[in-house]
Structures are given as C-alpha cells and as structure tokens.
Amino acid sequence: MKVIDRYILTGFLKKFIPAFIIIFFIFIIQTFWLYFDELAGKGLGASVIFKFFLYYSPLILLNVIPLAILLAGIMSYGNLSEQSEFTAIKSMGISLVRSFKYTFGFILILALLSFIFANTVVPYGNYKFSQLRKKISIKKPSVAIKQGVFTNLQEFNIYVREKYGKDKNQLKEVIIHQKVHGVPDKTIVSKTGLLKSLPHQQMIQLILNDGYFYHDLTREQKKAKDREKFPAMKTGFKKHIINIDVSDLNNVDFNTTSSGSARKMNFIDLKKYIDTIDSQIMQNQKNLSKEILLRSQIVSKKKGSKVSDYNSLNVILNDSTLIRNQSLHDIYSRAVNKADALTLFAKRKVNYFNKKQSERNRFVLQLNEKFAFPLSILIMFLVGVPLGAIIRKGGYSTPIIFGIVIFLIYYIFNMFGKNAAEEAKIPAWLGAWIAALVLLPLGLYLTYKSTNDHEFSLINTISNFVKESLYFRYFKKKKSIKL
Image 1 (tube, rainbow, N blue to C red):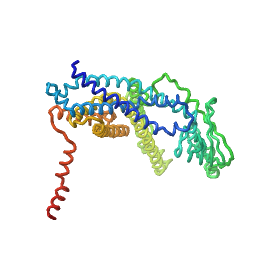
Image 2: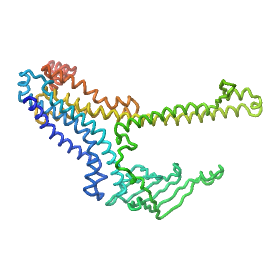
Image 3: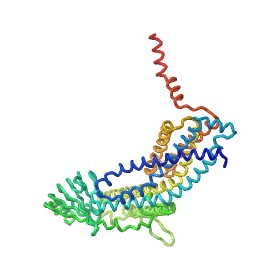
Image 4: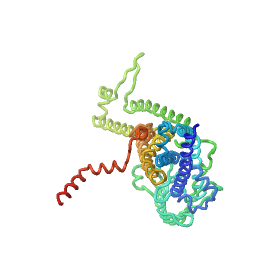
C-alpha cells in the first residue's frame, strides 16, 4: 500500500468512526423515546433495559452504517478538496477512482460483513427483542393492554379508555368482548378495573368493578320465535375477576432463530417459507376449481371410458317429474340462492388469496432486503466520495446537510418501496431495490462529474433557475418600467 493510499484510507476511517458513534447514539435516543411508555415507570432493572436496547441495536445498525459511510465520504474528500490536497493527488496522475482503491476495498469487506450480519445477527436480535417485550408484558401487565384501542389476549378483546396510577394498572371504562369458538359471544362493560400480574401462575388478573354482562342467547335457541323473545341477557355485578392465561408467551425456545415473522428469519428460512406459501397457494387454487364445480352443481358421469359433464339446470329442465313437482319460481329461487352462495364463497377465497399474497410479498421483500442492504452501502460510498470532492467543503456543517438530504431521499424511496410491495402495487423484489436503483445513477453521475473536473454548484444552479423563471423576468420588467 502506497503512502497516499494509506493517508486517504486513514482520513476516511477518522471520519467514519466518529460519525458512526454519533449517529448510533442519536438512533438509540430515538428508540428510547419510541418505547418510552414501555420502559418508564415500570420498575424494570438496568439489566432488562440494557437487554432491550442490545436486542434492538442490530436493527438500528442497518440505518446507521449507510448514513455513516455517506457522511464519512463527503467529509473526508471534502477536506482533501478544501485543502487542495486532492488537486495535488491529481497532479501525480491519480484519478478519483484510483484514489479510493483501498478505501473501496474496505467498503467491499464491510458490505460482505453487513450481509452476514443482516442474515444472522439481525434476525436473532429481532427474535429476542420481541420475546423480551412479551416477558415485560407478563411482568408488567399494564404494558400488555394498550390505551384507546382494542387489545387481543387469548379469547378476550379488551378496550380501555384510560390507564392511570403509578404503574398504569388502574383502568377506566373497560369494554371486553369474550369469544367462544372464535366468535364474540359475551360483552363485559365496567366503569373501573385493576390489572394484576400472577407470574408464578403465569396469569394476568383483571379485576372489574361496577359493570354488566351482555350475553348473546340467540345461538342457544333453536326456534326462530325463541330467538326473538330471548335475544340477549343483561346481568350486573359489583366485582368480577378474569384470569387470562399467558403461559404460551413464556414457553419459547430462545435458541431458535425462526418464527412466524419475516424479520426473525435468515435467508434459508425465508426461502423455505416462501416455497411453502407458493405450494399452499397452488394447492388452494386447484381445490378452488373443484369446489366451484361442486357448488355450481356440475357433476361428472362416466359412460364407459369417457367422462361427460351435465349441467344440473339442463337435467332439471329435461326431467318432467321435477317440473311437475316444483314450480319454475322455486327452481329460480334455488338457482339465485346457489349463485349468491357461490359469489360469497368466491369473495372469501379472493380475500384468502389476497392475504396469502400479501404475506408472501412481506417475506420476498425481507429476502431481497438482505441483498439490497450491502448494495446500499456501496452506493452511499459512490455518492459521498465524489460529492465531497465536488463541494470542496470539509468539517461537519455542509457535509451533514448534504448527507441528511441524500439519506432522506434514500429513506423515503425505501419506505415507499416497502409499503407499495406489501400492498402488491409493485413487485416485492422491486420494493427492496427501488431506493438503491434511484441513488445508483446519482452516484455514477457524481463520479463522472468529479473525475472530469466539472463544477457542480447547487447554489448556483438554484440561483440560475430563479433568474430564468418567468416570475423573475416579469418582476424585473415591471421594476424597470417604474423607473
């Protein structure tokens, strides 16, 4: 390694390491405020809070590393250009691309390590983070039930208008829908309530005061007249205790990386799960065609070795016995009812396929993100280095402004791609790559500009645009007329 290469690489690392530490600290503070309600005032020990941030930090690094590389590239090459060192380097016959030869090698190694990190450490961290939050919910039951929205716990759907008290375990205006066999059967309304944790019994105890039971009786009545007479039953109570079993939340194997969430799976598990979803969709599509044939009353009848299909409507019309026993109105009513049932069945199947496709999109998106993340590191380097050489400003002020603007563009397109992919508006793979594909031409353009010593002043560009605008011309003309 030549002295000049060592000097450039050292200058880049001197900017990268402080930028990485500062940005990581900022993201940690943001995470603290994001989960402030779950951590503050819950009596959690320092070790639990440390684990909380430790398990979440791998996900933070996915955002920190590209931004730190972008800022390091702008600041390091901005300093070289501002102090005319980059001009001296060019006078030695070393171009921009040749100058970051060893620095780019460092970025390639970092990109490879980041892929391994995103494929192993990040899924495990997400898994442990979610399980830790569940354990906090068990230890501090007020975390398990959110305020102002319905929370699903086992067979209970719980709504609380307000939580108050030291531990936020005292409740106001509680509404509970209790499900029997997956269907809401009983509604409980109370003015106040209290949450208690029973960790030894793996239970959350909900004590309700001054309320009513509303029990649906229509399912218990076989006759329609009885259902009209006894639609529901209302019973008052002064105190009612509900024990919610949360033992399933504790029975977790912490050595297992995979679970039902895409973020908790590595590359191999994601590929297997996507193949499983594809096979399920194909099998359901085959079953759907058979089910539609059966529900539309199209039957197959063998005649020797041949199979011929008969429509039930033709059978009915050709059968004089059916015509005599049933009126055409009855036949029409049966056909309409059958068509309505078939339409409802088709809508349910469409919803099922949409949900399956949305689930598949999330897993395909996560799979492609593991490869798109290392590429984003390379692109941020290709954008930051030539941009620093062009703006010729070192320090922190100007590079930070440019870095934040570029990173916001990357972040906006990244979020747009994720949301559009999950909603199936664009292909799932494109949602993961769209941010990198947008910034890649910018990086190549800036590299071309810097290599050929072309000036690129954003302030002058904006100023020239304003001067050439119709408004400026009109304003200048009007002012000259007044004079």
